[in-house]
Length: 223
Image 1 (cartoon, rainbow, N blue to C red):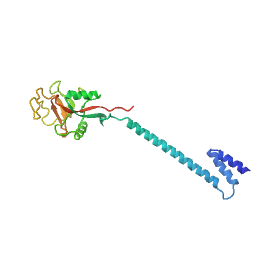
Image 2 (image 1 turned 120 degrees about the vertical axis):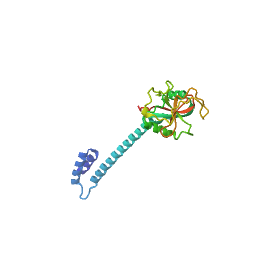
Image 3 (image 1 turned 135 degrees about the vertical axis):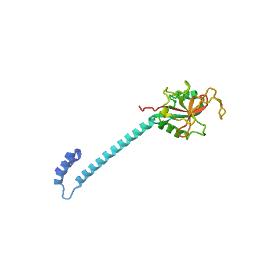
Image 4 (image 1 turned 120 degrees about the horizontal axis):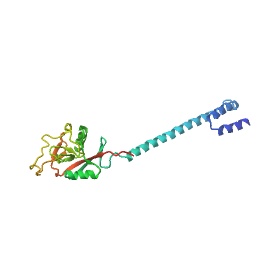
């Protein structure tokens, strides 16, 4: 009778301390050679640990998945814009004048690109290698001396740093005659375009000449 009552209490009590106590007392009354209750308790403990590890693994996987979804849901740049160095770049393949190209960039909350360092120039040259169809297929950048000849200003009104000039040989030349492409330049060349002639790829051109263009704007911060 004592064994029957004690066994019911041991099963109903979930705490580790009482389970250990039950194992000790039960072993005094059980038949010699019988160890099944103790083994059962050990199996129960191992199973509980496995369940706990499984739950933690599931929670960790869910957290990692949530982080990945958040990252994908918050891109640094809009579709069609390419991220680099904290900025987003848009390479327009439609040709238009310098002023029209700038208006297009500003309509997308950006502006024609301002090149601040050699690394940015290298990036742009590398991207244009994939986008230019021929040597004359060039892109407007945000540099002009239309306000005052030979005073080169970026669209953000900063002056061109003499240490960061990437002119082709013989440029800028402010040509005022006719060129081999059949265009006349009575007003000279006051806007700058670039291609892929290594790093030295800038040349001045009439602002009315139809060219492709490069827009830029800061990357968007995730909420």
